[in-house]
Amino acid sequence: MNTVTFDGGFADPVFASQDVFQSVMHAFSMPGTIASLGEWALGPAPLCAAASAILLTLADYATPVWFENSERMQDAAAWLTFHSGAPVVPEPEKASFLLLSEATDVAGWSEFARGTMEYPDRSATLILPVRSMDGGASLDLTGPGIEASRIISPTGLPDGFVVAMAANAALYPLGFDIVLVCGAEAIALPRTTRIKEV
Image (cartoon, rainbow, N blue to C red; front, side, top):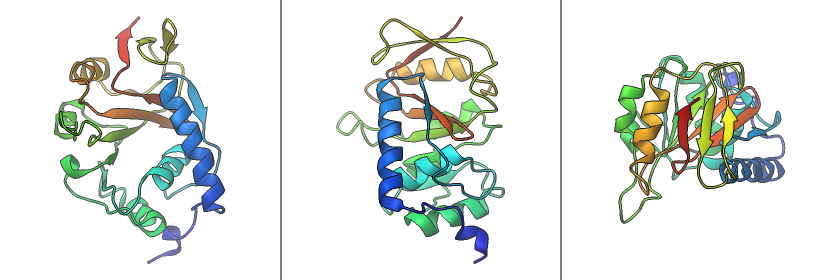
């Protein structure tokens, strides 16, 4: 096991995980707002600080994680398992958390866990890296946690993102939740959020 597996974890696991957890929960309660997760953790490339912190905080031995670009993410997968105990699985449908690649194809998102009517919470959380939190096409968000509407404009969303998210929202109370990440910033988009192009 090389040193890259050990470096970049939480220096103060209790305080860091509490801080990140509160920030992530606040982001989910106010979809579309940008949460700054700080530089608490930084896993091996291509993991960004936000994705690293989220996974270290929310993933554990009982929450399987899937990495979309498995060959490129071997160091990141080993790092996560070392620091959190989370198992890395090859089957996306079995994962509680999915670290997508910037080249992700939304056509494959139908494989991800969406929960069941008895247990809608048994659904996946997708972590999607984007190039920037602004500068892209404007998207209008509505739904719980948004007073009227909220505009976001991330750069680097995959083709078909809005259509895929509309199909996901239509399954409520089933469906996955998604977190956009870039650097140390994150935007949460729960399944209840309606997204349309402006």
